[in-house]
Length: 145
View 1 (cartoon, helix red, strand yellow):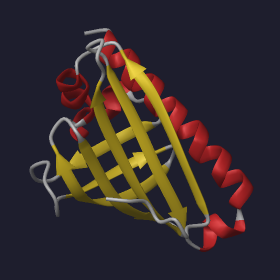
View 2: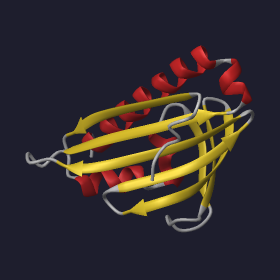
View 3: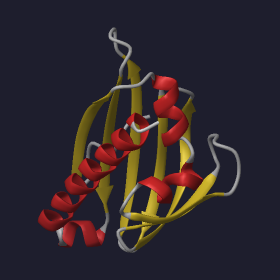
View 4: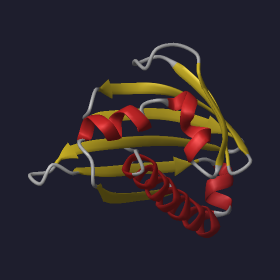
């Protein structure tokens, strides 16, 4: 799965987490628990199993979102497409085992839509800040276990 290279904004981030990939996957793949450890997510509900075609609704930084899982490869990739007011996004998470036993988490996201184009500068900053927060919160949650 790839992000939309033609989208109004795109960004990529990564972080090394001091834990095996299975531990990172267990936390990140439990969508219904995101609100317990992610400071910007106040609600997240996956209605079915974690598999392609399943949908989840969530609220992040005050925005209500509906997303569809497009790719799941346990301990390797989790990707979804989502829509919210005036925006659409594609978000891909990749998990890699490092030689030292740690996990490299890479995330790539593209956003498009009329609101994103209208507020491109602000939306790019918000997206980058959001991904920094997500990665830091994921690292803290996994490493505290």
